[in-house]
Image (cartoon, rainbow, N blue to C red; front, side):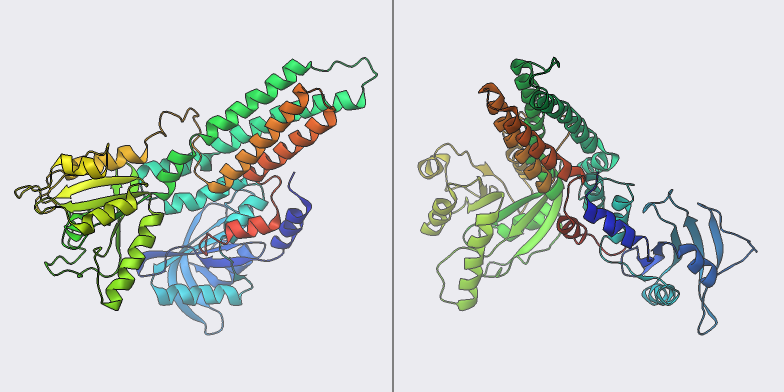
Length: 471
Protein backbone atom coordinates (compact mmCIF):
# COMPACT_ATOMS: atom_id res chain seq x y z
CA UNK A 1 0.00 0.00 0.00
CA UNK A 2 1.22 3.47 -0.82
CA UNK A 3 1.47 5.71 2.21
CA UNK A 4 -1.11 8.31 3.22
CA UNK A 5 0.93 11.24 1.88
CA UNK A 6 0.96 9.70 -1.58
CA UNK A 7 -2.83 9.25 -1.49
CA UNK A 8 -3.23 12.94 -0.61
CA UNK A 9 -0.96 13.86 -3.50
CA UNK A 10 -2.98 11.61 -5.81
CA UNK A 11 -6.21 13.35 -4.80
CA UNK A 12 -4.70 16.77 -5.45
CA UNK A 13 -3.26 15.65 -8.80
CA UNK A 14 -6.71 14.62 -10.02
CA UNK A 15 -8.18 18.06 -9.38
CA UNK A 16 -6.21 19.96 -12.03
CA UNK A 17 -5.13 19.53 -15.64
CA UNK A 18 -1.50 19.86 -16.69
CA UNK A 19 0.10 20.57 -20.06
CA UNK A 20 3.57 20.80 -21.56
CA UNK A 21 5.52 20.46 -24.78
CA UNK A 22 6.47 16.78 -24.86
CA UNK A 23 9.04 16.91 -27.66
CA UNK A 24 12.53 18.48 -27.59
CA UNK A 25 12.78 22.22 -28.09
CA UNK A 26 13.94 23.17 -31.56
CA UNK A 27 12.83 23.04 -35.17
CA UNK A 28 11.43 19.72 -36.40
CA UNK A 29 8.74 18.14 -38.50
CA UNK A 30 6.39 17.43 -35.58
CA UNK A 31 6.01 18.81 -32.08
CA UNK A 32 3.60 17.43 -29.47
CA UNK A 33 1.66 19.22 -26.75
CA UNK A 34 0.59 16.77 -24.03
CA UNK A 35 -2.38 17.50 -21.72
CA UNK A 36 -3.51 15.31 -18.81
CA UNK A 37 -6.33 15.67 -16.32
CA UNK A 38 -10.11 16.11 -16.04
CA UNK A 39 -10.32 19.09 -18.43
CA UNK A 40 -8.37 17.44 -21.26
CA UNK A 41 -11.36 16.58 -23.44
CA UNK A 42 -13.03 19.92 -22.71
CA UNK A 43 -9.89 21.78 -23.85
CA UNK A 44 -9.85 19.68 -27.02
CA UNK A 45 -13.44 20.66 -27.88
CA UNK A 46 -12.71 24.33 -27.16
CA UNK A 47 -9.61 24.72 -29.31
CA UNK A 48 -9.89 22.06 -32.02
CA UNK A 49 -11.97 22.45 -35.18
CA UNK A 50 -12.08 19.12 -37.04
CA UNK A 51 -12.08 18.93 -40.83
CA UNK A 52 -14.96 16.45 -40.62
CA UNK A 53 -17.81 16.97 -38.19
CA UNK A 54 -17.65 14.81 -35.05
CA UNK A 55 -20.02 14.67 -32.07
CA UNK A 56 -17.64 13.16 -29.54
CA UNK A 57 -14.01 12.13 -29.40
CA UNK A 58 -13.36 8.40 -29.47
CA UNK A 59 -10.48 7.17 -27.35
CA UNK A 60 -7.27 6.31 -29.20
CA UNK A 61 -8.45 7.81 -32.50
CA UNK A 62 -6.59 10.43 -34.54
CA UNK A 63 -8.45 13.52 -35.76
CA UNK A 64 -7.35 16.04 -38.40
CA UNK A 65 -8.25 19.71 -38.08
CA UNK A 66 -7.22 23.21 -37.04
CA UNK A 67 -6.10 24.51 -33.66
CA UNK A 68 -7.53 27.98 -33.06
CA UNK A 69 -6.96 30.93 -30.78
CA UNK A 70 -10.22 31.74 -28.98
CA UNK A 71 -9.24 35.33 -28.18
CA UNK A 72 -8.09 36.27 -31.69
CA UNK A 73 -10.33 33.82 -33.57
CA UNK A 74 -7.49 32.75 -35.87
CA UNK A 75 -6.02 29.41 -36.87
CA UNK A 76 -2.70 28.74 -35.12
CA UNK A 77 -1.82 25.48 -36.89
CA UNK A 78 -3.15 22.51 -38.80
CA UNK A 79 -2.85 19.61 -36.36
CA UNK A 80 -3.61 16.00 -35.56
CA UNK A 81 -5.37 15.44 -32.24
CA UNK A 82 -5.90 12.29 -30.19
CA UNK A 83 -7.42 11.58 -26.80
CA UNK A 84 -6.65 8.60 -24.59
CA UNK A 85 -9.44 8.22 -22.05
CA UNK A 86 -8.79 7.03 -18.50
CA UNK A 87 -7.67 4.58 -17.30
CA UNK A 88 -6.17 3.49 -20.62
CA UNK A 89 -3.58 6.23 -20.95
CA UNK A 90 0.02 6.81 -19.89
CA UNK A 91 -0.98 8.81 -16.81
CA UNK A 92 -4.17 6.87 -16.02
CA UNK A 93 -6.11 10.13 -16.56
CA UNK A 94 -7.81 11.55 -19.65
CA UNK A 95 -4.88 12.56 -21.84
CA UNK A 96 -4.96 14.74 -24.95
CA UNK A 97 -2.09 15.03 -27.42
CA UNK A 98 -1.89 17.72 -30.09
CA UNK A 99 0.53 16.99 -32.94
CA UNK A 100 1.61 20.35 -34.35
CA UNK A 101 4.29 21.39 -36.77
CA UNK A 102 7.54 21.43 -34.87
CA UNK A 103 8.50 25.11 -34.81
CA UNK A 104 9.24 27.00 -31.60
CA UNK A 105 6.72 29.77 -32.27
CA UNK A 106 3.81 27.49 -33.16
CA UNK A 107 4.39 25.17 -30.19
CA UNK A 108 4.57 28.06 -27.73
CA UNK A 109 1.44 29.62 -29.26
CA UNK A 110 -0.55 26.38 -28.98
CA UNK A 111 0.67 25.70 -25.43
CA UNK A 112 -0.29 29.24 -24.43
CA UNK A 113 -3.86 28.67 -25.72
CA UNK A 114 -4.09 25.39 -23.82
CA UNK A 115 -3.04 27.13 -20.59
CA UNK A 116 -5.62 29.87 -21.17
CA UNK A 117 -8.27 27.18 -21.67
CA UNK A 118 -7.83 25.83 -18.16
CA UNK A 119 -4.62 23.81 -17.88
CA UNK A 120 -1.51 24.69 -15.92
CA UNK A 121 2.10 24.14 -16.92
CA UNK A 122 3.33 20.71 -15.84
CA UNK A 123 6.25 20.35 -13.46
CA UNK A 124 9.30 18.24 -14.44
CA UNK A 125 8.32 14.57 -14.54
CA UNK A 126 4.73 15.25 -13.52
CA UNK A 127 3.16 13.11 -16.25
CA UNK A 128 5.20 10.10 -15.14
CA UNK A 129 4.56 10.91 -11.48
CA UNK A 130 0.83 10.78 -12.20
CA UNK A 131 1.33 7.45 -13.96
CA UNK A 132 2.96 6.19 -10.75
CA UNK A 133 0.33 7.65 -8.44
CA UNK A 134 -2.44 6.20 -10.60
CA UNK A 135 -0.80 2.74 -10.45
CA UNK A 136 0.08 2.67 -14.16
CA UNK A 137 3.75 2.23 -13.23
CA UNK A 138 5.57 1.40 -10.03
CA UNK A 139 8.48 3.59 -8.95
CA UNK A 140 11.26 1.49 -10.46
CA UNK A 141 9.38 1.42 -13.78
CA UNK A 142 8.90 5.18 -13.62
CA UNK A 143 12.65 5.64 -13.10
CA UNK A 144 13.25 3.38 -16.11
CA UNK A 145 11.41 5.92 -18.29
CA UNK A 146 14.19 8.49 -17.84
CA UNK A 147 16.81 5.76 -18.33
CA UNK A 148 15.11 4.87 -21.62
CA UNK A 149 15.24 8.48 -22.77
CA UNK A 150 18.85 8.96 -21.69
CA UNK A 151 20.19 5.60 -22.95
CA UNK A 152 23.48 6.08 -24.83
CA UNK A 153 23.83 2.58 -26.32
CA UNK A 154 21.64 -0.35 -27.41
CA UNK A 155 22.72 -2.35 -24.35
CA UNK A 156 21.75 0.52 -22.06
CA UNK A 157 18.43 0.76 -23.88
CA UNK A 158 17.85 -2.96 -23.32
CA UNK A 159 18.43 -2.59 -19.59
CA UNK A 160 16.01 0.35 -19.38
CA UNK A 161 13.36 -1.63 -21.27
CA UNK A 162 13.84 -4.59 -18.93
CA UNK A 163 13.14 -2.38 -15.92
CA UNK A 164 10.24 -0.64 -17.68
CA UNK A 165 8.66 -4.05 -18.36
CA UNK A 166 8.83 -4.68 -14.63
CA UNK A 167 11.51 -7.40 -14.47
CA UNK A 168 13.10 -5.87 -11.36
CA UNK A 169 9.71 -5.05 -9.84
CA UNK A 170 8.51 -8.64 -10.16
CA UNK A 171 11.62 -9.94 -8.45
CA UNK A 172 11.33 -7.42 -5.61
CA UNK A 173 7.64 -8.22 -5.09
CA UNK A 174 8.42 -11.92 -5.04
CA UNK A 175 11.05 -11.32 -2.32
CA UNK A 176 8.57 -9.25 -0.32
CA UNK A 177 5.95 -12.02 -0.46
CA UNK A 178 8.52 -14.50 0.84
CA UNK A 179 9.42 -12.10 3.65
CA UNK A 180 5.76 -11.64 4.55
CA UNK A 181 5.48 -15.43 4.99
CA UNK A 182 8.49 -15.38 7.29
CA UNK A 183 7.08 -12.42 9.23
CA UNK A 184 3.72 -14.20 9.63
CA UNK A 185 5.54 -17.21 11.04
CA UNK A 186 7.48 -15.06 13.51
CA UNK A 187 4.38 -13.18 14.64
CA UNK A 188 2.48 -16.44 15.09
CA UNK A 189 5.19 -17.65 17.44
CA UNK A 190 4.88 -14.38 19.39
CA UNK A 191 1.08 -14.39 19.70
CA UNK A 192 0.49 -18.10 20.25
CA UNK A 193 3.42 -19.30 22.33
CA UNK A 194 1.17 -21.38 24.56
CA UNK A 195 -1.20 -22.60 21.84
CA UNK A 196 -1.02 -25.68 19.67
CA UNK A 197 -0.16 -23.69 16.54
CA UNK A 198 2.33 -24.94 13.97
CA UNK A 199 5.41 -22.73 13.76
CA UNK A 200 8.36 -23.47 11.50
CA UNK A 201 11.41 -24.69 13.39
CA UNK A 202 14.39 -22.36 13.83
CA UNK A 203 16.44 -24.18 11.19
CA UNK A 204 13.74 -23.67 8.55
CA UNK A 205 13.30 -19.97 9.38
CA UNK A 206 17.04 -19.39 9.29
CA UNK A 207 17.30 -21.20 5.96
CA UNK A 208 14.42 -19.22 4.44
CA UNK A 209 15.96 -15.90 5.51
CA UNK A 210 19.33 -16.97 4.05
CA UNK A 211 17.75 -17.94 0.73
CA UNK A 212 16.25 -14.45 0.35
CA UNK A 213 19.54 -12.84 1.39
CA UNK A 214 21.37 -14.89 -1.26
CA UNK A 215 19.00 -13.67 -3.99
CA UNK A 216 19.53 -10.06 -2.90
CA UNK A 217 23.31 -10.54 -2.90
CA UNK A 218 23.12 -11.98 -6.43
CA UNK A 219 21.23 -8.92 -7.67
CA UNK A 220 23.67 -6.60 -5.88
CA UNK A 221 26.61 -8.33 -7.61
CA UNK A 222 25.37 -6.97 -10.97
CA UNK A 223 25.56 -3.29 -9.96
CA UNK A 224 29.12 -2.66 -11.17
CA UNK A 225 28.32 -3.80 -14.70
CA UNK A 226 24.85 -2.25 -14.70
CA UNK A 227 26.13 1.15 -13.58
CA UNK A 228 28.65 1.20 -16.43
CA UNK A 229 25.99 0.28 -19.00
CA UNK A 230 23.63 2.95 -17.65
CA UNK A 231 26.02 5.81 -16.90
CA UNK A 232 29.02 4.93 -19.02
CA UNK A 233 32.73 4.97 -18.32
CA UNK A 234 34.83 8.09 -17.76
CA UNK A 235 38.31 7.77 -19.29
CA UNK A 236 40.85 10.57 -18.85
CA UNK A 237 43.76 10.83 -21.30
CA UNK A 238 46.75 12.38 -19.56
CA UNK A 239 50.48 12.83 -20.09
CA UNK A 240 53.08 15.52 -20.70
CA UNK A 241 52.65 17.98 -23.62
CA UNK A 242 52.99 16.77 -27.22
CA UNK A 243 52.69 13.04 -26.53
CA UNK A 244 49.62 12.93 -28.79
CA UNK A 245 46.67 13.19 -26.39
CA UNK A 246 44.57 15.32 -28.75
CA UNK A 247 45.57 13.17 -31.72
CA UNK A 248 44.40 10.09 -29.82
CA UNK A 249 41.06 11.71 -28.98
CA UNK A 250 40.55 12.69 -32.62
CA UNK A 251 41.41 9.14 -33.75
CA UNK A 252 39.01 7.57 -31.23
CA UNK A 253 36.04 9.75 -32.19
CA UNK A 254 37.08 9.77 -35.87
CA UNK A 255 36.90 13.53 -36.33
CA UNK A 256 39.14 16.53 -35.73
CA UNK A 257 37.60 17.63 -32.46
CA UNK A 258 40.79 18.73 -30.68
CA UNK A 259 43.41 21.11 -32.06
CA UNK A 260 46.71 19.37 -32.75
CA UNK A 261 49.95 21.41 -32.90
CA UNK A 262 53.58 20.98 -31.89
CA UNK A 263 53.28 23.95 -29.52
CA UNK A 264 53.17 22.91 -25.83
CA UNK A 265 50.09 24.12 -23.96
CA UNK A 266 47.70 24.11 -26.93
CA UNK A 267 45.09 22.23 -24.87
CA UNK A 268 44.21 24.32 -21.82
CA UNK A 269 40.63 23.22 -21.17
CA UNK A 270 38.93 19.84 -21.20
CA UNK A 271 37.53 18.35 -24.38
CA UNK A 272 35.00 15.58 -23.77
CA UNK A 273 33.45 13.21 -26.31
CA UNK A 274 31.45 9.97 -25.94
CA UNK A 275 31.84 6.91 -28.15
CA UNK A 276 30.29 3.44 -28.05
CA UNK A 277 32.66 0.55 -27.32
CA UNK A 278 30.83 -2.79 -27.55
CA UNK A 279 27.69 -1.34 -26.00
CA UNK A 280 29.40 0.79 -23.34
CA UNK A 281 29.15 4.59 -23.53
CA UNK A 282 32.75 5.73 -22.96
CA UNK A 283 33.44 9.41 -22.31
CA UNK A 284 37.00 10.34 -23.25
CA UNK A 285 38.47 13.48 -21.69
CA UNK A 286 41.43 15.16 -23.38
CA UNK A 287 43.41 17.19 -20.83
CA UNK A 288 46.16 19.78 -20.74
CA UNK A 289 49.72 18.46 -20.83
CA UNK A 290 51.36 17.97 -17.43
CA UNK A 291 54.48 20.12 -17.06
CA UNK A 292 56.02 22.83 -14.88
CA UNK A 293 54.75 26.20 -16.08
CA UNK A 294 54.68 29.79 -14.90
CA UNK A 295 51.66 30.80 -16.99
CA UNK A 296 48.73 31.24 -14.56
CA UNK A 297 46.18 29.94 -17.06
CA UNK A 298 48.17 26.77 -17.75
CA UNK A 299 48.73 26.27 -14.02
CA UNK A 300 44.99 26.33 -13.44
CA UNK A 301 44.45 23.93 -16.34
CA UNK A 302 46.98 21.45 -14.91
CA UNK A 303 45.40 21.70 -11.45
CA UNK A 304 42.04 20.81 -12.98
CA UNK A 305 43.67 17.87 -14.78
CA UNK A 306 44.54 16.27 -11.45
CA UNK A 307 40.95 16.78 -10.28
CA UNK A 308 39.60 15.05 -13.40
CA UNK A 309 42.08 12.21 -13.04
CA UNK A 310 41.09 11.58 -9.41
CA UNK A 311 37.41 11.10 -10.36
CA UNK A 312 37.96 9.03 -13.55
CA UNK A 313 36.98 5.38 -13.88
CA UNK A 314 40.12 4.78 -15.94
CA UNK A 315 43.22 6.85 -16.71
CA UNK A 316 45.18 6.46 -19.93
CA UNK A 317 48.77 7.56 -19.33
CA UNK A 318 50.12 8.44 -22.76
CA UNK A 319 53.86 8.41 -23.47
CA UNK A 320 55.82 9.39 -26.57
CA UNK A 321 57.68 6.25 -27.60
CA UNK A 322 60.00 8.17 -29.91
CA UNK A 323 61.66 10.02 -27.00
CA UNK A 324 63.27 8.91 -23.76
CA UNK A 325 61.28 8.93 -20.53
CA UNK A 326 61.38 12.31 -18.80
CA UNK A 327 60.79 13.51 -15.28
CA UNK A 328 57.35 14.75 -16.38
CA UNK A 329 56.46 11.26 -17.65
CA UNK A 330 57.56 9.67 -14.39
CA UNK A 331 55.62 12.26 -12.35
CA UNK A 332 52.40 11.42 -14.22
CA UNK A 333 52.97 7.68 -13.74
CA UNK A 334 53.81 7.99 -10.03
CA UNK A 335 50.74 10.09 -9.29
CA UNK A 336 48.41 7.60 -10.98
CA UNK A 337 49.97 4.21 -10.24
CA UNK A 338 47.56 3.39 -7.39
CA UNK A 339 44.46 3.88 -9.54
CA UNK A 340 43.06 1.96 -12.51
CA UNK A 341 45.44 2.91 -15.31
CA UNK A 342 46.39 1.94 -18.84
CA UNK A 343 49.88 2.74 -20.04
CA UNK A 344 49.84 3.57 -23.74
CA UNK A 345 52.94 4.36 -25.80
CA UNK A 346 52.14 6.53 -28.81
CA UNK A 347 54.06 7.19 -32.06
CA UNK A 348 54.74 3.50 -32.71
CA UNK A 349 55.30 4.48 -36.35
CA UNK A 350 58.62 6.13 -35.34
CA UNK A 351 61.85 4.53 -34.05
CA UNK A 352 61.26 3.60 -30.39
CA UNK A 353 63.36 4.81 -27.45
CA UNK A 354 61.12 3.49 -24.67
CA UNK A 355 61.25 -0.27 -24.08
CA UNK A 356 59.15 -2.51 -21.84
CA UNK A 357 61.98 -2.86 -19.30
CA UNK A 358 61.86 0.89 -18.65
CA UNK A 359 58.16 0.63 -17.90
CA UNK A 360 58.53 -2.49 -15.74
CA UNK A 361 60.92 -0.64 -13.43
CA UNK A 362 58.38 2.12 -12.83
CA UNK A 363 55.10 0.19 -13.07
CA UNK A 364 55.71 -3.50 -12.28
CA UNK A 365 53.16 -5.85 -13.83
CA UNK A 366 51.78 -3.31 -16.32
CA UNK A 367 52.30 -4.18 -19.98
CA UNK A 368 52.03 -1.06 -22.15
CA UNK A 369 50.03 -0.90 -25.36
CA UNK A 370 51.78 0.57 -28.41
CA UNK A 371 49.74 2.64 -30.83
CA UNK A 372 50.03 5.23 -33.56
CA UNK A 373 47.35 7.88 -33.09
CA UNK A 374 48.47 9.42 -36.39
CA UNK A 375 47.85 6.29 -38.49
CA UNK A 376 45.41 4.32 -36.29
CA UNK A 377 47.69 1.37 -35.52
CA UNK A 378 46.74 -0.35 -32.25
CA UNK A 379 43.47 1.59 -31.74
CA UNK A 380 41.20 -1.51 -31.97
CA UNK A 381 43.36 -3.21 -29.31
CA UNK A 382 43.15 -0.10 -27.14
CA UNK A 383 39.34 -0.15 -27.29
CA UNK A 384 39.28 -3.87 -26.50
CA UNK A 385 41.50 -3.34 -23.45
CA UNK A 386 39.27 -0.51 -22.20
CA UNK A 387 36.27 -2.84 -22.44
CA UNK A 388 38.09 -5.64 -20.63
CA UNK A 389 39.23 -3.34 -17.82
CA UNK A 390 35.71 -1.93 -17.43
CA UNK A 391 34.26 -5.36 -16.72
CA UNK A 392 37.22 -6.93 -14.98
CA UNK A 393 36.02 -8.78 -11.85
CA UNK A 394 32.38 -7.96 -12.71
CA UNK A 395 31.11 -10.39 -15.33
CA UNK A 396 32.17 -13.53 -13.46
CA UNK A 397 30.53 -12.34 -10.23
CA UNK A 398 27.16 -11.41 -11.71
CA UNK A 399 24.86 -14.42 -11.37
CA UNK A 400 21.40 -12.84 -11.43
CA UNK A 401 19.25 -12.48 -14.53
CA UNK A 402 18.25 -9.05 -13.20
CA UNK A 403 20.82 -6.30 -13.63
CA UNK A 404 20.94 -3.45 -11.13
CA UNK A 405 21.67 0.01 -12.54
CA UNK A 406 20.29 2.52 -10.05
CA UNK A 407 22.17 3.66 -6.92
CA UNK A 408 18.92 4.19 -5.00
CA UNK A 409 17.94 0.57 -5.67
CA UNK A 410 21.37 -0.66 -4.62
CA UNK A 411 21.21 1.18 -1.30
CA UNK A 412 17.72 -0.18 -0.58
CA UNK A 413 18.83 -3.75 -1.33
CA UNK A 414 21.95 -3.39 0.81
CA UNK A 415 19.82 -2.17 3.71
CA UNK A 416 17.40 -5.08 3.26
CA UNK A 417 20.28 -7.58 3.23
CA UNK A 418 21.74 -6.08 6.42
CA UNK A 419 18.38 -6.31 8.23
CA UNK A 420 17.95 -9.93 7.13
CA UNK A 421 21.42 -10.87 8.39
CA UNK A 422 20.46 -9.44 11.79
CA UNK A 423 17.16 -11.32 11.72
CA UNK A 424 18.89 -14.60 10.94
CA UNK A 425 21.39 -14.05 13.77
CA UNK A 426 18.55 -13.37 16.23
CA UNK A 427 16.77 -16.55 15.14
CA UNK A 428 19.90 -18.70 15.43
CA UNK A 429 20.70 -17.31 18.89
CA UNK A 430 17.18 -18.16 20.06
CA UNK A 431 16.36 -14.59 21.03
CA UNK A 432 12.78 -13.34 21.26
CA UNK A 433 11.04 -13.69 17.87
CA UNK A 434 9.96 -10.05 18.25
CA UNK A 435 13.55 -8.94 17.55
CA UNK A 436 13.75 -10.93 14.31
CA UNK A 437 10.28 -9.68 13.35
CA UNK A 438 11.42 -6.06 13.72
CA UNK A 439 14.35 -6.71 11.38
CA UNK A 440 12.17 -8.48 8.80
CA UNK A 441 9.72 -5.55 8.83
CA UNK A 442 12.62 -3.16 8.21
CA UNK A 443 13.79 -5.35 5.32
CA UNK A 444 10.26 -5.24 3.88
CA UNK A 445 10.31 -1.46 4.20
CA UNK A 446 13.62 -1.22 2.34
CA UNK A 447 12.44 -3.43 -0.52
CA UNK A 448 9.20 -1.44 -0.69
CA UNK A 449 11.19 1.72 -1.37
CA UNK A 450 12.37 0.27 -4.70
CA UNK A 451 8.87 -0.11 -6.14
CA UNK A 452 7.40 2.88 -4.30
CA UNK A 453 5.30 1.02 -1.74
CA UNK A 454 6.98 2.73 1.21
CA UNK A 455 8.61 5.79 -0.36
CA UNK A 456 8.25 9.24 1.21
CA UNK A 457 6.89 12.23 -0.69
CA UNK A 458 10.26 14.02 -0.44
CA UNK A 459 11.99 11.13 -2.19
CA UNK A 460 9.30 11.04 -4.88
CA UNK A 461 9.71 14.77 -5.52
CA UNK A 462 13.47 14.36 -5.77
CA UNK A 463 13.19 11.49 -8.24
CA UNK A 464 10.66 13.11 -10.56
CA UNK A 465 12.38 16.52 -10.47
CA UNK A 466 15.21 14.94 -12.50
CA UNK A 467 12.83 14.30 -15.40
CA UNK A 468 12.36 16.72 -18.26
CA UNK A 469 9.20 18.82 -18.49
CA UNK A 470 6.68 17.01 -20.68
CA UNK A 471 7.57 13.53 -19.47
